[in-house]
Length: 489
Image (cartoon, rainbow, N blue to C red):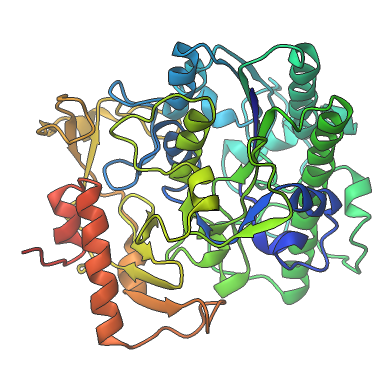
């Protein structure tokens, strides 16, 4: 048995034909839907990038205890567990955060891994002279913006684009190992994460009149641009989604050509979506996490059941990916995993979970039961108390500063830290926008765009009770309850 995971970054379900989009050119996602089970009620868990990947490895939430960071010494890593049980695991990715301090312990859990350089501001090409940067609608400040323009000069042909090189390496692994058994391949693409840099052929799929300054990298803030600029950005994003679709198609073509459908699991997923002007915002790390960010696409082919062209409405999450892979290879789940194998949700006659949590460390703690979404906000603008619990004190690109560590304490073990005490580090990096947005309650059945918050005290009390239940089951730190103003008996 074999398994292929195709993981895209920031892939929004609203841009995919199987989820109702009628203007984005993505025939291979439609083809995928016809060949797999499509999940309609899949939610992200911890956001953004590396918190989501910790969930893939561990099958449990990250954001209640920690922000962005590496795998912890006490964590259960699905690729490593598979490796220990004789499953060969291989990662190929252009997601450059793997090679920074905040992600540096994930890729080494696989037997082998390949890195593709050049996405976003990846410090890849060394160039002392400043690159030529055109006039831009919303130029980003700092070295990432400069480095991105250095990198782009080395991607003048499609086959040099990191997305193309990543999939080429993944396809090469499949061809080289198709006659072998018991392996996992993870093809992980940074696309369609911004910036939306694509060859002209994909832009030509979306002809439109636009004569404004360059604009293919949305800022993380409220929309200040003109409607024409917003629409242009959406076409730029769509072009990159179409490029992702084309390379997904190459995986499907190869599985056809090599007759792999009878013994190969295929999981196509993403970490979260993206706001591209909806709710008047650009980005993903803004509060609240509306459905455009949190409600994500997911497809699975399981050769054991051969179910295809079906829809599964069960409430599932990113924390289910690791357990899905372990169960497929007949490897027991660990006691600390909260996720449920997706195969169980496909065949279950009744819901397997009462609700799902999602969010970012220090932001809203969101809960859904599949129909209603409750976004619980901090009760004070200080958003305190708030702590990081970790033995790997790193941010995205650097370790914690000395000043952050001077008042750290040792916390008592959590249920999942295997009797290890962690560092307890006070933080002020919480999301103040969550307090200003306030707590919000939505009915996705009657208000899927989340434009009309409900004022229903009885429903809010029920969703609050569900939130408290799931926080307890996750062994959330006591201050999470205090920060959110939750009274626990």
